Image 1 (spheres, rainbow, N blue to C red):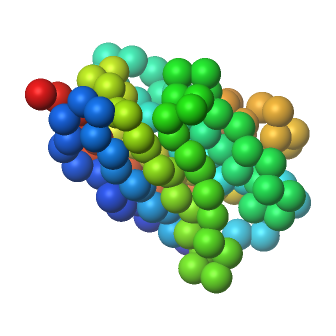
Image 2: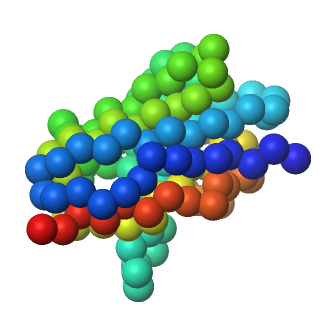
Amino acid sequence: QVQPVESGGGSVQPGGSLRLSCVASGYTYTNNVIGWFRQAPGKEREGVAAIHIDDGWIYYDDSVMGRFNISQDGSKNTVYLQMNNLKPEDTAMYYCAAGFRGNIRYWRLTGRYDHWGQGTQVTVSS
């Protein structure tokens, strides 16, 4: 079983940028969707963005629309999350998820993903 692997987290000041990477391979699913989620202390895990690897469909949570950009490099089996104009409320552990089941319209539902990475910490503070 292959597990997604995230990298790229760190500490930045408000307004700064980070690019997260997720290497996910070895999956054979009808719906080839990769999702980015985040979880802050004391809060539930929430969907940030998702991309359909084959069709290119992209979804964002309203809280990151216009600031975050999800993309893929198929040759590297890698999905990126470019995060710009970061805010303190973006502080969280960020997770990559793969092995999606069902209709992509439900990309926010954590239970639809079978494989999760260990997470990478993003801290935004002055």
